[in-house]
Image (cartoon, rainbow over all chains, first blue to last red; front, side):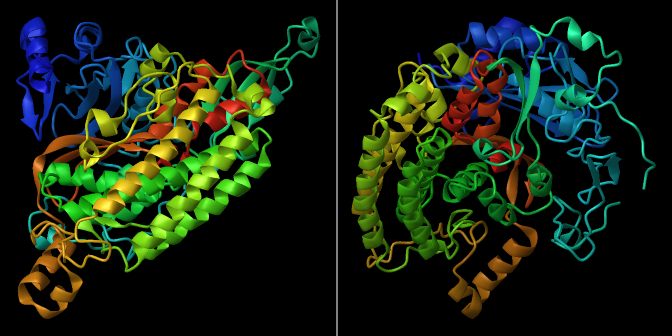
Length: 193
Length: 427
């Protein structure tokens, strides 16, 4: 039987039971929710060694600002042999903002997790070298959070760098997703709240 | 503005320049002393602004710490604040050596989200494949030219850049821009090929094959080149997969994996081409893989030009864009003369297309590796989150594991063979 996203989701479900949520199928891809972020390493280890998902394509992060749990970390797994993929998602609350690192399973996770820490401020316990990667050491904010304004916030680091907010007024047109009405949605210059 | 504060900077180079508190300590073990060398961010072989902090024991690298982010522009943040179509020009600036391929990858990702990727017109698919493969030839010509220049073979660079110039001319003819093409649109293309373009492209293919042969003669059996690249920077199969390498770097290590074959998009399942694979995983293998990929791209280009639906100058009036006014920008001539198209254009430009809620990941085989877009949509015209899986970022993450044990001069070969672009790495 060929391996497909559906069979992978079913195999995970069979092994871990209620830890794995119902698979969401969309455009030929399957995503499953891992309900307990602390057990992500266990699931990842099983996926790599038993389901031949040996290639970690990417780790992304989502900020559901104003909702609880606030963070979602998304792992995109693929098997280079059977060529099927599955997406694991796990949610972390804002108070905790920490989940175990999967660097022990795939070494490529190292930089992806550093990037998520840098951009979103989610920490990965057990990561060998959790430092900022794109922003400079000592930068005080997490710029990909939804409450960080597009124009930026002032920050400074002596002798190395400083930033000021970008002059957005009348500047680039900012479009807002899913606004109440056309006026709220359409591209126009907006000042950060 | 906040007041100045003192911060502890974890920076080996800065630390090394500081005098140690007691001067005697330095004299204790002079023999085992290690030196910290700061390579980059502005160094000819770092292809942009990569900084490497190398710890050296004599001439051997014992530890390597890449420092990236000098070109970070916040593309992912910017994407959350604009419509899907508005983001197309930003994709040009990811891997700026292959902007056409980035445009195609991004357009396909959004089309997958919209569920219209199977409806693309045949002519559009052919032109997109032509764009991708031209971009691949262009990027590999530059990659090999710079790689050879970094290890001392300057002539190769001159030959490959002459050919790249012709690709820029072709790109200029189709899109009006040489570097920042922004040629694709969601559901189609900006415009059709100009008259006579396919003949120019065929002429170029004839010439580029001569250039590839010339480079082959200059390098493949060149004693110095082989000495500088063979058995240098060996990446095993397992290591390549573990570090998530993609593109020629993964295939150079002997992993037969090409997104065009494994998950065919556009026309790739109907085209006849081979995927070259290395055997050792050293710098020389990665060079050979790139050379062969260029030849295969030329094969693909010939097939697409021969089969182009509608003929070279579209005498058959084949459509380019999907005829769906609610998703795809309508033809400009019709917008100016007809009511319905005007309304569609107005809605699409002011509100963006109406994407369904959901999340997708789409990866395309770009010259540098797998360029992927993860789009999380909550509906409406803008992505809630757009993550770019950039191949250069992932490929560079292997450096701390790969460089130790090599000579400083081999670092240059290894960097050249990994062929990265910082615009894409730092986003």
